[in-house]
Length: 519
Image (cartoon, rainbow, N blue to C red; front, side, top):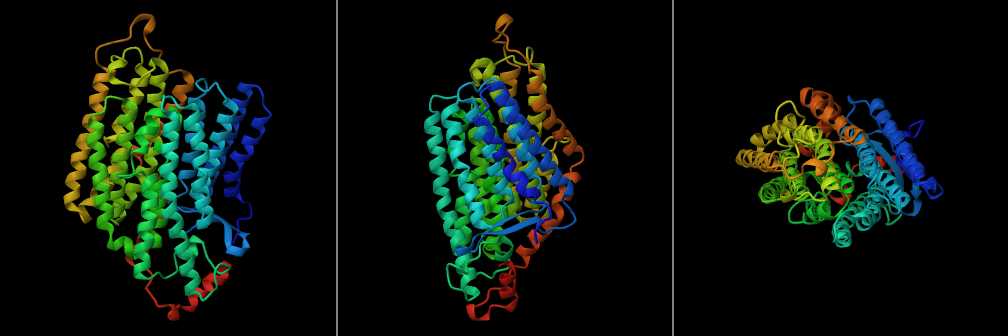
C-alpha cells in the first residue's frame, strides 16, 4: 500500500530539485542562500517524517511502491523503519553543516559545489529509504560521482585528485560483489516461485526477507554482501581510502564520510537479515574482523601527529567496535551499535569540522603547528572537549550509553573480546587527550596579531546544536533507543528464527502468494 502523500519521495527529490535553479543564479551569495534554504527545508521534511513515524511498530512504514522497470520486476519502493528513520534528519543536518562550514572557503565553481552537495544529500536519502535492492544499488553507486568531484576539485591537499581516484576505485571494487549478491537473491526467488527469468525476478526487500535460501547460497550471498559493505564502512583491510581522503578532501566532505556510515548500515539492513543463518553461523568472523579493525586502527591513531588523520583512524576504530556489537546478536549489543552509528553523525562529523576550522585559521592541523590554542580559542576548545569526551564514552555524553550497551552485549557473547574493547577504550582516551594536551594546552605558538580567531557566530551555530544533542542523549538516551526498539526486536527475531530451508519443489503457497501480492 502507498501513503496518501509521498513524504519520503519529497525528502528524496527535494534536494535534487533545489539544485537545478543554481544553474541560473549567477550571484554567489544568492546561490549560497538558496542552497541553504533548500537544505533547511529538507531538514524540516525529514523531521516531519520522524514525527509521523510510529516507534511502536517494527515494520516498514510510509511505504511507497510503484512499478519502475516492468521487464525486470524492479519497483520504485521506499519505506523506513526504526533502523533507518533517524538517519534521514541526520543526513539533512550534516548537509546543512557542510554548507555552513564551506560558506567562505569555497570560492571557485561555488554553484557547482553547492549543486553537488544537494545532489549527494538526495542520493544519500535514497540509500536510507530504498526497499528495492536494484533501487538501493542505483543510489549506492550514484554517491560516487558527486564525491569524486567534491574531493578532486575542492580538496585541501596536493594529492586531492589521487584521493578522489582512490576513493572511487575502492567503491567500484566494493560494488562488484554487492551487485552479484543482489542478482543471486533475485534469481533464487525466481527459481523458488517457478518463474522464468528475467520477468519473474524479485528485488523487493520485504519479499526477499521471507524467501527461503539454501545453506550454500546463504553463505555465498552473505560473504558477497559483507565484502561490498566492508569497503564502504570501512573495515580493515579496506580502510586505507579514509585516511587519504581525510587529509586531501575538504573538511566538510570528510565530515560527511565519517558521519554517515553507509557501509555499516548496509550490513545491518541487508547482509545479515537476507542471509540470517549464515550470519549466525559466521558471527565469529564478524567479531574477529571488528576486533582487528578496532585494535589496529586504535594503535595507528595513537601514533598520529595530524588531527585529521587521527580522527580518521579513530573513526575506523569505532566502526570496528560497532561491528563487534552487531555480531553479539543481543538486544543490548545491537541497540548500542545502532546508537553509536547515529553518534557518528553528531560526534565524528563535528570533530572533523573543528579540524577544518583549525586548518582554515592556521593552514595546518599538524601537532607541530598547533599549541596553546585554548587561550585564543576558548569556545572551540570547550566544544572540542565535549565531542572528544563523547568519543571516548565519558558519562553524561551520548557515547557512554552506546559503549555501555555494546560492552554488555559483548560480555554475553564474546567475554574475551570485552577485555579487548576495554583496552581500546583506554587507548582512545590516550590518543584523544594526548593530542588535546599538546595541541590545545601546549606551549603557545601564536600570539599577538598572529593569534587565531575564535569561533564565529556561524561556526558556533554549526557546533552548538550537535553539542546539545551529545549532552541530551547522554542524559536521556531512551528517547533514541525507544524509536529503534521495535524494529531491532523484529531484526533479532529473524536471526534467532530464520526461514526454514526448503527444496525447490516444496516452496510453500505462502511464499508464492506473497510474491504475487508484491507484483
